[in-house]
Amino acid sequence: MRKIYCDNGATSYPKAPQVGESMINYINNIGCNVNRGAYSSSYEAENVIYETRELLCELFNFDKPENVIFTSNITTSLNIVLKGLLSEGDHVIVSSMEHNAVMRPLNSLSKKGITITKVPCNSLGEIDIKNIESSIKENTKAVIMTHGSNVCGTLLPINEIGQICKNNNIIFIVDSAQTAGVIDISMKKNNIDILCFTGHKGLLGPQGIGGFLIRDYIVPLVDPLIEGGTGSLSEQEVQPTYMPDKYESGTANLPAIYGLNSSLKYLIEVGIENIYSKEMELTKKFIDGILSIDESLLVGKKDVENRTGVVSLDFKNLDNGLVCHQLDKTYNIQTRSGLHCAPSAHKSLGTFPDGTVRFSFGHFNSEEDVDYVLNSLVDIISSKSSI
Ligand SMILES: Cc1ncc(COP(=O)(O)O)c(C=O)c1O
Image 1 (cartoon, helix red, strand yellow):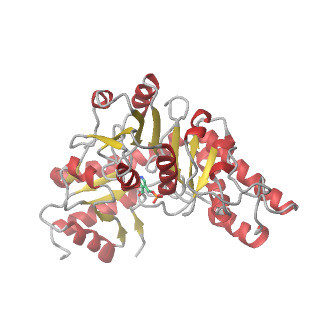
Image 2 (image 1 turned 90 degrees about the vertical axis):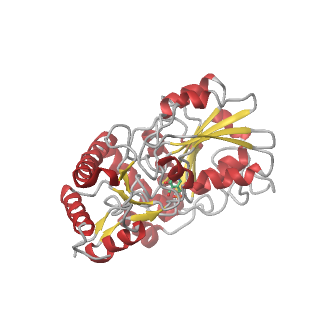
Image 3 (image 1 turned 135 degrees about the horizontal axis):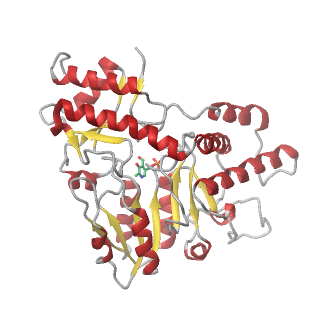
């Protein structure tokens, strides 16, 4: 039975063409470190890393490749940024749709005197930006917000929020885990100060690579979380302050950067608009199908305006975990059930503590996949296949 992968919100599968080949090429034919060897293959690898920073600048409309920092994933990026930026007395604003990659570091910082305002979203996952404005205090240092909910797919209006932050001299930090590579994001147009990304979801790259793009004026405000060897200024036993070395100590995940380099070239070649419109066609087909089966299954928005391909269903009379299991066992369809590391999002959506079954369609899904998933759900609901 063919595998129907509908868990692109967790990680994309398959990856962009050439990702595997590039990684194998690095492992088999290059293999050396960078900044630590004065020979041609090391310089070649350095060029690939720099080119990858440039590709990320192209994708996110930014013009400082040296301010593109590589980490192992967006969780690490958010930890570096939040823990390096915030100190006692600072106030931050978040939405109720945040992932634990934002909430857990913030809650641990709250023990050190950082205060948090969580602006509630409605049962469609939408935020009222007036509530962001009215939450601003004199000591508000940053707004940290996810661009797209990993539970229901609703997009938050980063353009408007970026403008509010700019008007009030507040640092705007965006968690692009669910949207990078799928929806156009512009550091400049959206007034983003720090854009955190992960390489293995919509960017169609491998696991183990992520990062952040940071504007120059904030660099002095964010202390590095990890310090150590950078291959530069080796005569000094203190961390360099220039970019990107300030935040990049230790050997980088070079095979993953090679893989990401290929996936970024693929995304730029296909075009983000084309990627998004294909995902929305599939999502519309799925949502329309669900509405015709049973409208009450659908959690959050019932249309394809301002959303991603993440769709949550709540089976109410059935156990969501068992539905997810049955989809895999009987139909070879991969989804994810539970709370998706975002408990407050489920509280807003009215699905806490039971959670939902999340279907997340990606670039390589097809209309046939959606038809097959819908037919399988009809089977399960009508108990043709026993849970
Ligand atoms: C909105 C959001 N933020 C952060 C993360 C964490 O991503 P990663 O595991 O790549 O660090 C995820 C992934 O599940 C997510 O959906």
